[in-house]
Length: 115
Image 1 (tube, helix red, strand yellow):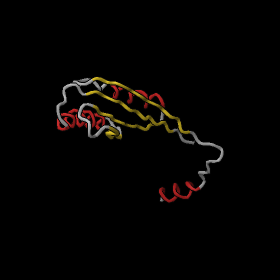
Image 2 (cartoon, one colour):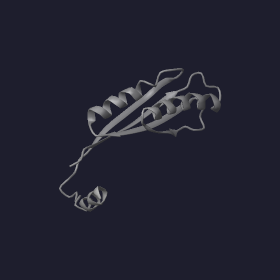
Image 3 (cartoon, one colour):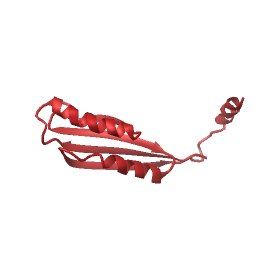
Image 4 (cartoon, rainbow, N blue to C red):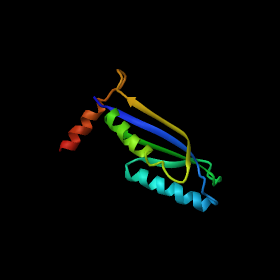
């Protein structure tokens, strides 16, 4: 039996102080770097050519919904600075085995790993 929980998040921002794509890059790269340090997979997912707007998507996976929610909350707290958060979305999905999941093929792999 396994337990897998994933979080998918999106934050849209209006960058008040940005006057160029270079300014935008400095702001977004700082946030992206800090999110990655927390273990998130991160990408800039929209408005790449607009220096006043940024969209950042990030995800995290864990074994319990409480752990995933706690880490996502930490990530969301990073969105403070010289910008305005316009939209914030987050979804936590629980992946659970179904009756149709046949994991018997793993028995052979587990045996190989023990040798």
